Image 1 (cartoon, rainbow, N blue to C red):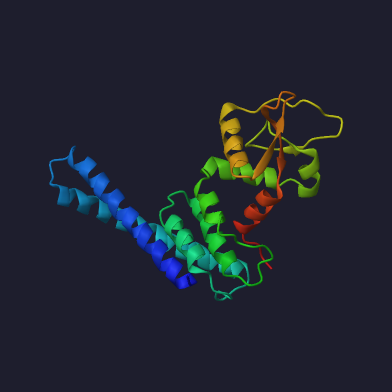
Image 2 (cartoon, rainbow, N blue to C red):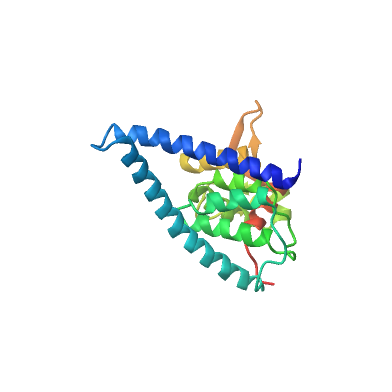
Amino acid sequence: MSEEAKAVQEVAKTAGKAIDATAGSARFLAKFVSAPLEQAVGILVDHLKYIRFERGVRLQQRAEALMKEAGLDAPTREIPIALALPIMQHATLEEDDSLQDRWAALLVNAANASFEGEVLRSYPSMLSQLSPFDALVLDVIYAQPYELAHHMGIATVDLPNSARVIGEDELDQPSPSDKVVISLSNLVRLGLLRPSYTWGGGESFGRVNPTVAGRTFVRACQVKSP
């Protein structure tokens, strides 16, 4: 099956799911408001259109600004529909500016033939599963020297304010707050970090190690000047 045919199938599947979800939400909303089902559907559709229009305008502005930072006047390579579609879908619904900036960077890097990394098809799914707090934690960790941190590990107790590479003579590390532990566990689940382990095999989040997958993902979500 051609890439175009696959893309059409994916669009159809996505559209069908969206219609089902909207109808279900409208039926639920209609129970709480004095309006018929058709009107409830209209309320939801109009609100969704407004959100996507507003966020789409900001996405365009940020993407154009990031293209200039990358030294581009226009895209220098085409993005496969199977990659471009999920980026646009998620990016135009993302209400947090810091996360939408990452979507804009992902879009620009995918369209930049000079981008040294690779924007994998798995990245939209991974980025969609990050909260703003997760993204902040990830940035602080990957701001550390990678080659050293990859082997020595990162002390997490002061996250999200700061992180540091662990010294050779340091053993046990205190655990961070529960909020940070939950964030770290999500990043580990996505393969963006590796935790340390207790003697019994349990996860320990006082120390984490950056991964190759995490480093390439973080790079893909950032635009650097040439």
